[in-house]
Image 1 (cartoon, rainbow, N blue to C red):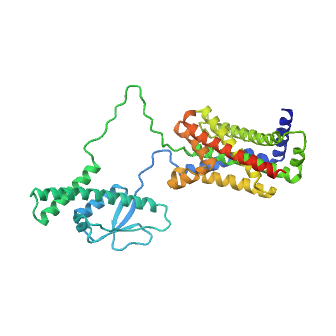
Image 2: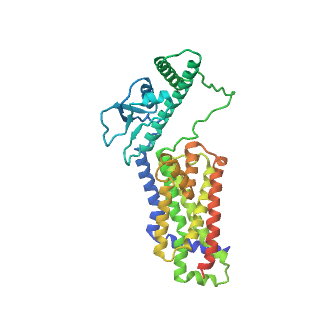
Image 3: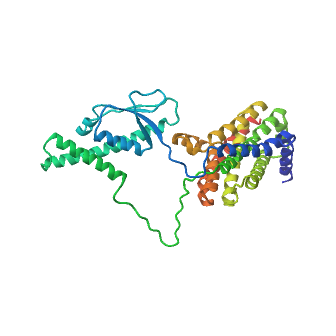
Length: 401
């Protein structure tokens, strides 16, 4: 135990041997938390968001009830329609062909041309909204055609004009029924049962900044184990220690444990500072916060051990620590809410421990998660820790000589 304490003490003295170490450890995390919180505060509104409507230019080459039904559906999915003769290059546009109504009545495929804005962030939303509107009209048209077939079989309609009139009535009636259903569910809860609706709540700007910057800067501290191990390997210190009557496990464990203690200390300081300086509710679920913090620290410390076996020079180690920390933080949602990113992106970035840590912290802060609720994230982080540490130890046996 005395030798282990000596290794930890030596590591701390080397890690904090200059003012820049303290700048990265304390000053920059708080400065960036304030800056990011202020920046997000100008774009994130804690109040319910206002409905966003998109302008859609329409070239109408057909008219009638079917086209009116299409326009009603488009307005129902947050489009403001503007009839035009030509489509501008910088506008979203839709061309309704002249055979739209006839093909819809006949049950034939009809093609509408959608013009999109290249490079616009709204393009996917526009495409999905137009597809949704067309789907509504297509479904209503199918119901209307079935109604006409039954009416024709019963002898209620005999001419094309009568069929067209009935088709119009059925089409518009079906769409109206979809928009305003006759039956609605009314859920009555037993006495004493409270319904929570914050399952998808987003963290506010201060909460997101505090959690995100904690993850960002603690990663730098924890991955810093790679710099220490590489430096000792290059100076020959590590090899001399390995030939001493001290077990390899004690030497390696001391280095990793020293880094882990530094990381946990930094987490504790940033949690207390976030609560006092920015009013973030880190005390709402202390057990959940502690579990996520410990699992995250173990995962990144293990990654630091593995990183030490992959780089050759101190410069490579330093660049890898900063670059990897910033990249994982940026992609993992530490700098901006992942809720604004596409679903595929949110799935891909799950390969980073930072993603799971940020999500778990925000579950605690914004969604009132307790220890049991964050256990899945904790389990994933511990899985990262086991894999990184195991591979790092196996590689360390070969790289340490």
